Length: 291
Length: 122
Image (cartoon, rainbow over all chains, first blue to last red; front, side):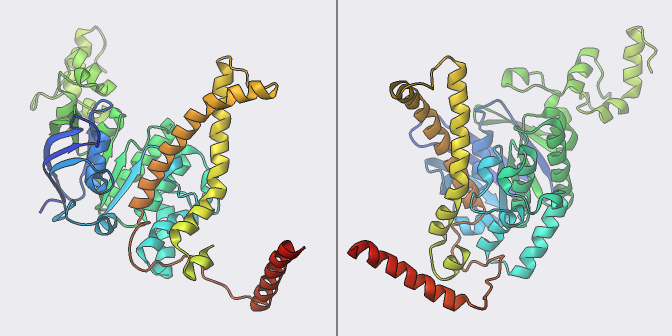
């Protein structure tokens, strides 16, 4: 059984005429790292809300189709069950802080207190999350005194401590500097290795190309493609769909460097290096030494 | 506050009371940023009462909208962290019982009642 199964999902926000999600279907297996890409208003956040149960439980509106998480349909189950399985992190770290906790340690405990976890296990889980996110050194600080990157890591730690089987991240690095973004991606990759299924809406294509197993391309609320990063970024219509392919892919396209077997352009430097023969040939033609 | 929640105060009321102390300074900081933005576009924000009143109204819109947006996002975050879960909650911090706690509580109750009576009958 797939971890996430979406069948003909449609959704329209209240008081609007247009569908934010239009007939989307796909399946995701346990432990996969999935990237969600598309222009602003493509439906990425709405899809994240639908997967996390906020649509239709929190956001009302017209809803059709099915979202099945680990065999249970989200619409039929209440939020009590959903929050035990799914964690959601979004772009603004500031508004993810509860506001009622005065240390990072207490902030992470908030969700566990609501779940009714006993104190011993709660402390163990918080310690583990602090270590995983490498924020042990700020455990006694007030969450509102932290930098954006640190605050975002606290937000992820708070969700991870609740031990979700699926972690959904809606542009979690949009307000972070390159170093902060890198840290978040590494942490998320480690979580995927631990068996947590990851869905991440993101605009940083280089990072997704590097970390994601598959990428889901949305445009105007419709699912355009769902495939490996190389296949998605090799598409010719990406720019028209409001997506900029990674620099590596654009350079490879300009130079005509592609995998001879699959016909796909490389999406990462590693893949470009794997195509050494083609790279050398092109560089030799351009007058370089091919090294 | 946690002790009051343990004794039966609604966690929602407890949360609101606790978060006010942290969120109001954040709102003030946002207000400062918006004031700076308005000022950089030539709006006069200092001077006599009339000038300050004129500067105040354009400020209210962005501050309120910004706060509403933050509140909506915070509500989503709280929802996803189980704030509305039914069932027994647990607490990270243990309640400590101090040596003269009952005596202090009794004393403070007497002070409170005396103050109210004094305010009424003075």
